[in-house]
Length: 103
Image (cartoon, rainbow, N blue to C red):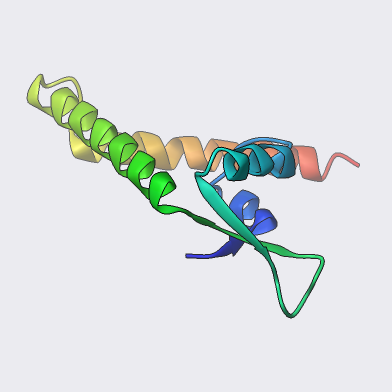
């Protein structure tokens, strides 16, 4: 789906400070497509190209294999992975709120 650079960050898809710079590099490398929003010309809509979707699929398969390996070797269950992910997201939200409301 198409999203704006700001949405990437607010939805948690991007965990960095310089979204525009990194998006520019991804566009130059052919992984992302960008287009000015017709309604708000200041806003840029981005989406994965076919090449970007191929990389996404490779990384997704890698994560799935790792999760399966962790489960098969009784390192952690899928519920344990979900619990850890939830806890880490909550911690990140807490820290982000602390930083946001410092001033």
